[in-house]
Structures are given as structure tokens and as C-alpha cells.
Length: 256
Ligand SMILES: Nc1ncnc2c1ncn2[C@@H]1O[C@H](COP(=O)(O)OP(=O)(O)OP(=O)(O)O)[C@@H](O)[C@H]1O
Ligand SMILES: [Mg+2]
Image 1: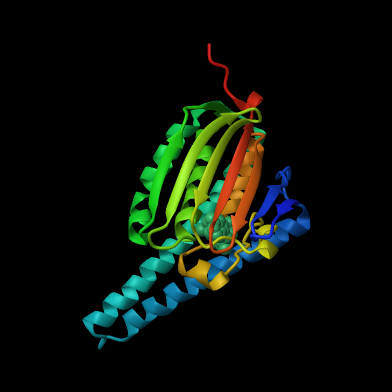
Image 2 (image 1 turned 180 degrees about the horizontal axis):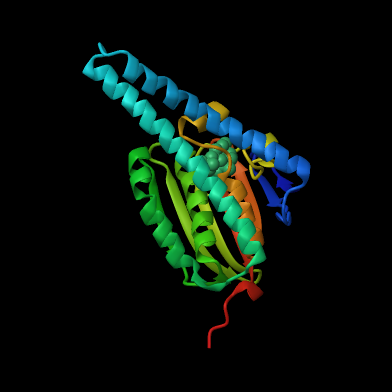
């Protein structure tokens, strides 16, 4: 990741290097398998442990039964999230080989992502707004949807009660700029270079509490690369984060 600028307010801006990795090297593949297995093992161990307690201890109170069932459900949801992320990454690889692009309206995708994440935003007490212009690119709708959803999910999760998230689509001389801006915890400058790496989490405990695996931003990076888009990230610890995905002019679909 190229460092772009850092100022006295602690604000850090980076250009994220494109993910031009058409397939992983043998070592990267081994690392990926090891990390993925480790991430899946943790919730599985929990699920097996708590279901054994439920099966083997007939004297449990209703309260404990409900508590253990809740843990099993939470861990199963985490496992399902990891599997969905791995499927998304493998579908990205697939789409690199078979590019089936169609017109996609970025503003509509932002509205849809905001709608899907509304329950999470309500639980977290974070306001989400969408603004900007309708702008069509030539792309793969599912990957664009996953990209925006992952950015918006982070912007809500790593935020504070009463915080804000703004999704916007604008056109400028560089192309079409999709921005996800939040008023959240921000990313310390020493971590900003790694957050797009697979399985990387700044605060592993905090992220695990919210069910994070560290795959979301690698999906964003892969989806941006598929569409020839660049990524810029700007963050100030304690104040918030802005991620901009810049689709070049030639990514726009030609309207008749
Ligand atoms: N908007 C943000 N504000 C603050 N920190 C962020 C933000 N987005 C990402 N991060 C940090 O970068 C890390 C990597 O993000 P990423 O989306 O890849 O993984 P995750 O959110 O932990 O898990 P997943 O997205 O797979 O559920 C996060 O764990 C978090 O520490
Ligand atoms: Mg995430």
C-alpha cells in the first residue's frame, strides 16, 4: 500500500495497491488454508462443547439452556459468515476468469446495502444515509453489492452509539467515486497498511466480539480490482474513516 499523506491531526491517507493476484502462490494458498481452518475451528469447538453440555447435563436450568443455545446460535452464525466470505472470494476468482459484466447503478446498490444493514445500524444506534447521483458502471452486481455491504458493515460496526455513516456516489474528473464515510473509532496509522490483507484485524478481540473474520476488506479489494477501480482510505483515530472506491471513466457502461 502506498503512503500518500499524513498530517499533524493524525489523519492518514493511503492508496491501496490493486489486487492483481490471479490465483494464490503455493505458500499463500497454504497460509490461507491454515488461517481459514483456524478461524473455523474456534466456533466449531464452541458449538461442539456447548451442545455436549446440553446433551449430557439433564439437570440444567431453563436459563442455562437458553444461554447455551444462544452461544451455539452465535457461533454457528459466525461460522456461516466465514463460509460466505470464502465463497465470495472464490466467486471473485471465478469472475476474473469469466467476466460477465452488465450495467450496475452504484447509487441503487448503496440504497440496497443501507436497507439490508438497517437492523444492524439500529441495534448499534448508528444513523446511515445515502446521497449523490445515479451512476452506472459496467460490472458484476453481486460483487458490487458485497463490496458496498462490507464497507458499510465496517462503518457501522467500528462506530459509536449516535455515530453516522454516509454512503455517497459522485462523478469527478477521475471517474465515479463511491465513498463510505463514518464517524467511528478510526484506524491507527500503523495498521492502515494491512487492513486489506486477508484475516487481518486491528483489534482481534473487539473484532471477534462483533463476529469479524478479517476477510471483508479483502473481498472489497478483490471486487475493486475486478472492476479496474482504485481504493483510497483515509482515517483519523477517534474521528472516523473514509474509504473511496474510484471507478475509472472507461468502467462506466455506455448508454445508448
Ligand atoms: N470503518 C472502519 N473503522 C475502523 N476500523 C475499521 C474499519 N474498517 C475496517 N476496520 C479495521 O480493519 C479490520 C479488517 O476489516 P475487515 O472488514 O477486513 O474484517 P472484519 O470486519 O474484522 O471481519 P469481516 O468483515 O470478515 O466480518 C477490522 O477488523 C477493523 O479492525
Ligand atoms: Mg468487515
